[in-house]
Image 1 (tube, each protein chain N blue to C red):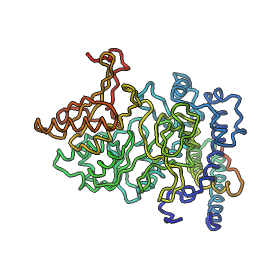
Image 2: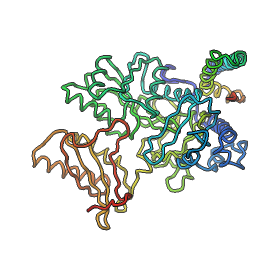
Image 3: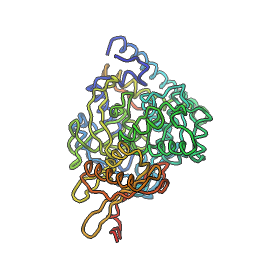
Image 4: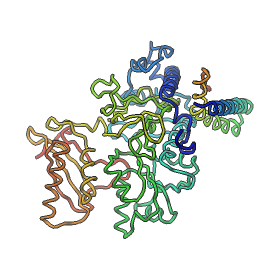
Length: 71
Length: 445
């Protein structure tokens, strides 16, 4: 993979993990509030798909290991 | 990368070198295996004593026992939490929906999906539709009431996610669907091969030309799609026709790209092993037939580990001109359940379909029946004609069909022509093959 692609992937991976952290925090903050809990859960589902397609590739290059968020 | 990035749904994963894909698959296999052991009673019991940390290679994976449909049925079988029983991999409150198998071979299996697992399936289908050329500008008509059957639901959600306009076609009869296709100017269809042909046939009976309806592409689901049938559909609709393979339990795991020369395995969403049919222990070589054993690598609500799909496929090369690096299969031969020994000859119904669709446009529908006459197996074919024909023409047609089937299958068929409209039409899975030898009283009078 070219250096340009690697840099792009790394940048995207950082944003994906950032969204994951923010959505997780939002879910915790809104515990018991359906509009927050349910929508945050949907966001995390899309993040899961993105980690499969992007973060897994980055982790392979960097030796990291994308952990699955607990259900 | 020879193609542009937008040719791929995910250009990074789809063009990743094979060794890297393999490493991702093994790592994700370890994760789902560990998850399944911890969260699903079936796997906790079945794989007691196997440490996920010891799974470091495909050879290690091959030592893990295979799961088949009977295991799944046994793990459900009325157990709590109903109806998912010991298969469930998440708390019941996480389940958003479920689908079920058709029950063709026994009790249906109930497949629970959390929102996350459902979106994972939809993501796989986004890859499939994008590969088949579906784009935002398409109006996708799905001529079925989907009920609890999964493929069209996945296609529906994925087409929406792509940005297509999706028109569900349930609650209409075939003529109503054809009228709707014209009314909304649909550009794409998702259907079974049988129903795609039936739609075209009905259009003809209405004085319409399916070739002029503006359909540009069709993705088929639900049945094997031999190349001859695919080509007949392409001719009927003047459209590109794409195949995919999958099932309710594992999801769709291989599909065609624009080259339409075999099917790409949807790596790295799945680990697919094509194993020898006798022992299920050896990966077959390129060009060889094998049974697909599939592990979806990201479905937590319904984990499946090394699931024996019983799909018989021919292993392909991995050097498609489209630039994707995934392993390929050349085609789907049929279901192991449908492979039969008849007079000592291994027979699959798809071979009949290939002959009829490729060489006999006069035949619109057919049915194969195997029964026992005395100590001999007898195989017969009812061939429904497109239109009535004179005796001598008919006699000649029957003779030619019989000869071609003998050459293709090494079996002598009793060919009986039937009148137009005499055989049933199927919306979902067609039932064109009946082996009466397995049934009580299955002997011919």
